[in-house]
Length: 418
Ligand code: ADP
Ligand code: ASP
Ligand code: MG
Image (cartoon, rainbow, N blue to C red; front, top):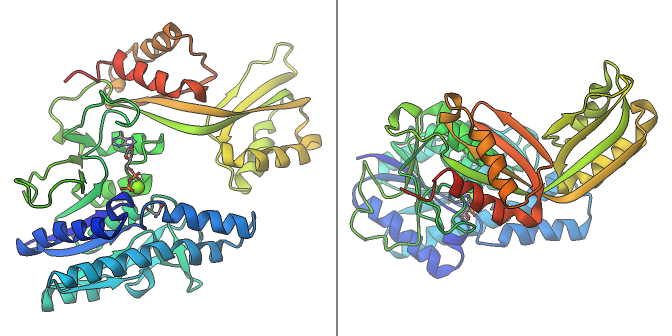
């Protein structure tokens, strides 16, 4: 007998018949004798609708009330799945974050889980084999109010619960059957990976592959949670679906569990990036702090930063990216502080995409970046900014070329070939 966490995303619980299909996946594991906690997302599109209502009610709204509203989607699905399971004769009970409780910090809208008291869930496993159906994406903050974990946060709820109950496995069920070399919706030639290392998955997720929330990968890595990404859109009783050691899907694991390491593992992209350039900024110590301090204080996430060498030694150009949704806020802040920052002009551009090449093998191979630049040049895609780290290269381009760039990079590293 084992303890399992099964998480189902929005499309997997998109309507009642999908929820019934999810119940069959759960039943398979219960029938095999396992203790199961299920984590559910809101039904597909629900969270977007709720977020839209908040914005419509007031563009700048109270984060506590935002949380009260957007957390409701998961509450509905948890109740519905508990009913569907009971209908199949399975002992099941729904749980909202506060009932467990899942305690978070006070950062409403982007809270981090601090502690989970899974005692009662485990007691019910042992006493009556009851299935816990947990509303994902939510917990309770120190102010005793509901807090949500940021978009895609149900993945994090699942891994955190898996860690709290010392689960043998955490299965993230979604609308694709694993982690691919790039988003299979953009590149049909993308291949599913049997395994991917925590480090690479972390980069893929941070750089836009939304198949797992970044924080869930961090937690899985720290707590050594055996995490699989797999599809809910298959017959729950098909052969192999209940395989305990090797379920179908992609295993996120330690680097040394991967035998054949590629130089490049995958390509990720993130749309809706914006770029800001400050022209003729004074070239003196403290300037970067003066510019980026206020942006950080306002919660604007500054990403790629390029500072040119000044020609005459007195002034320089500073270029950086922010999420398009934060562009207006950033411009307002920068214009307000213009006198202090002492720049000549501010220019901005939105509608950009960051494409990234990821692979642990880059640590020991040269020429990976040059290959990317050549592939983009051959398609006349202009590069606006570049950043690199030990295991990734990120390139900023015009958003119109997203698909073209992703496919070009995917092809040039041979990722479409087995
Ligand atoms: P869920 O609602 O189940 O949480 P998400 O929409 O958050 O699902 O994540 C799954 C989606 O992630 C897929 O439909 C796919 O389009 C996208 N995706 C992006 N990059 C990748 C990748 N490298 N591998 C698999 N899926 C990816
Ligand atoms: N429903 C939330 C969202 O759409 C959380 C999740 O699905 O993971 O962001
Ligand atoms: Mg998701």
